[in-house]
Image: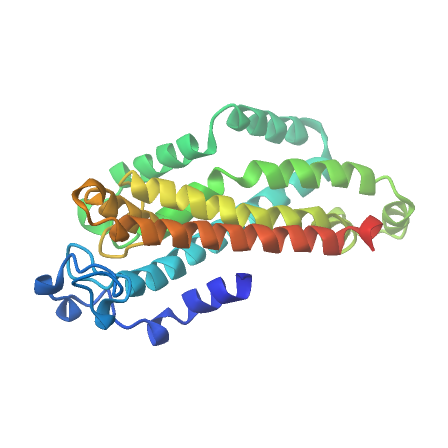
Length: 276
């Protein structure tokens, strides 16, 4: 299931019947076409068309590609930031450890979606109006990443506190290895197991966060529709009979998130030595 969802999203430019980003390919006369198996539907729009005459199936494939890309990039950013801070805090201790953990405690007091909304809003106000759509994806990645680094930092810090007292780390200190080398070469590989599992599961959370922001209208612009944007657009026509515009993107979002969670469960079992 995971391979099917990810493969379809990655191959969207080649397997999608239509390019939803090309205005010349849109036909307003074909707007609100029902799915092919309903009366009035055509095989050209297998899952129907939206208010712009855009093929829903093509929009879903391209939207899933964007959602997966944003989710993966946001998790990589959060993982790099959280692992770096957690590793340094756990190994160095002292005031730096206290500072990082207090910041993490404060951030945990707020919902992640609220933090992402705040960061995204500040970035949009700070940037020129003409540049907002052009850099909407990087801003969204940073906003989601900054709202999710705490889990990685706390996990790595806890593991580092245990690892730095073990014999192999003390032996590295005795032979004169620098603290940075000890952290990167000796400690880091031994604390990455739980982080990889958290990262896989957090991809699904990041995708949901991106979809929520886009549904609220502060995520990706309508010209680059993600699954959340498609659901928001279709929601305006849900009660007028054009249910397919929002239902099929919603089903696609659930399928992508479920497949990523299944991958996370498999990875957790594979990395757990007690289950071998």
